[in-house]
Length: 224
Image (cartoon, one colour):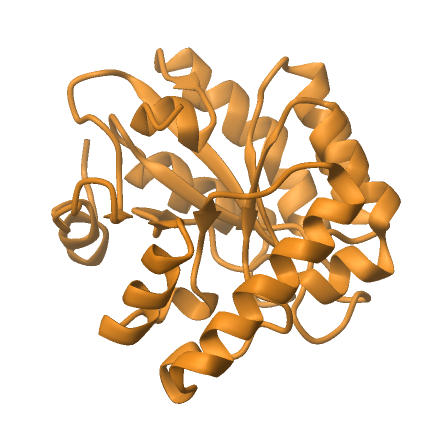
């Protein structure tokens, strides 16, 4: 498998056991689909329908304010057996925040997610993947495991046509990959994610044909 230099380097990022993970076991053909910035009322349900069709469980990193806007969609994610993670309340760059602000972003999102879904998340993905000592420390103090990613499917906006998304994911996925896609947006719930919806069945079928098994982050990293 040919990897771009950037993706190959990301896959070489060293996990810190129990603290931060970039990828799973490189021996087993297990991979995890993850979706950021939701929920959203148009594209998240379409993605859930596709996942149900293929009997796949994914991991959704939810923004608190979007859960407030669409609690029913968040509840559906949980009811259909997908893993739920915390993506902060308002998606700020946490590196620019002090520890109290970091903690508040995490706790506010956690409570909103819990009220909507009955799930208290233990996985956390920093907005933009931006992490430093203070972000890690506050997340760890709150009992969170930080989840980064090793393959990015781009963001699915107008500059990211579905064929580019498909090619990027299929080319770079390998054993243990954590794949980043998006179902919502931090700024507007009207952001077009249709290209990701269009790409998803092709990605799933192509990777299944290569022998990959889709699992949740908890299953990939044996965090249960």
